[in-house]
Image 1 (cartoon, helix red, strand yellow):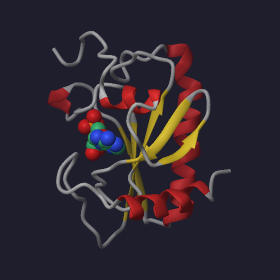
Image 2: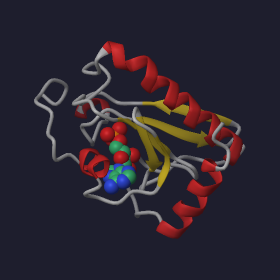
Image 3: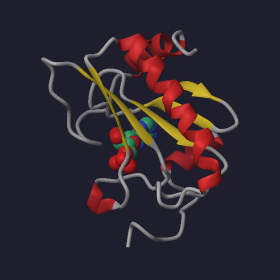
Length: 145
Ligand code: AMP
């Protein structure tokens, strides 16, 4: 059901892309927008969202637009790695609610991991402090190639 359904143009990320909702931006061009996850699973948790597509998930994404989008995912992942110097980086996405998806516009998560630190829950817990997210976003933006 949630895996294959009509695209809802009023999902949260569509609103962020339209500028109808705020976000703490890291990267933006004509292909993609990257911004900080407001319920970060680790410090530096960043989302990369494709623009100008009505793709609920990876399976819906027009194949011809995938390459350019994935280049942005890698650009942002590299900047996150340089800025946060983690021990590892998770780059992932979920398709359909049973798989863990909660926002139905395609996005990749970039989640830094440290050997000695656990992960916060997915899309859960307390909303992050906006000032702290802005400071992290500034650090990541400074490392964009
Ligand atoms: P998913 O569950 O894979 O669809 O991921 C959605 C992600 O969006 C979760 O990690 C949420 O914490 C995050 N999220 C929800 N609302 C917002 C928002 N307004 N701004 C930034 N991130 C959000």
